[in-house]
Amino acid sequence: MSDGFDIRQVAGDYSKAAARMKAEALGTKRRSEIRKAITTATKPVRQKIRDAAMDRLPHKGGLNRWAAVLPTAISTFSANSSSVKIRQTKRGHDLKSLDEGTVRHPVYGDRKAWVEQSITPGYFTDTVEAEAPKIRDEVTGAISKYIETIGKELQ
Image 1 (cartoon, one colour):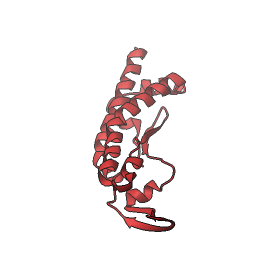
Image 2: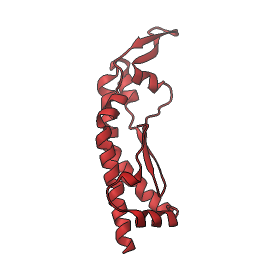
Image 3: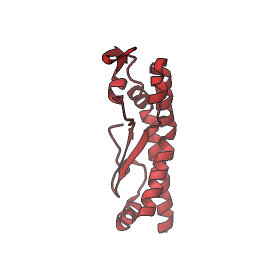
Image 4: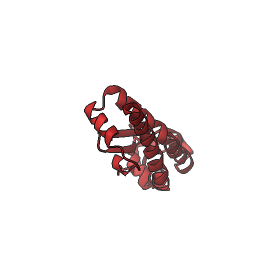
């Protein structure tokens, strides 16, 4: 997911919580808690991406099983903003090309001759785009819950 969201978009007045987070410079414990919440919130969508790879990529030769790795959730945040990217990496193939609908592979019996084959595109991007509102809601909810916890600590 290329775009993030701003923590200020979460409903409510979190100025005290944001000030505390900034004052603490988001210590290691706080960062771990937020990252854990984001990882948990995005796990169902990341599993759907893995399932889409199994369903949509070619079964013959095991490309679907090979590409069906659980994507990672990469979070960046500060006291004022937060963003989440879902990224899938695997060595040995161009996953971007797979998602765009092209797989390059050797001809059976001749490892020196390579061909490009068209496949169904979008196993990753279609899934993310379909789930984007849910991803945003889950992550926003997780961060909102976390901020409420900090707010209670301030009182």
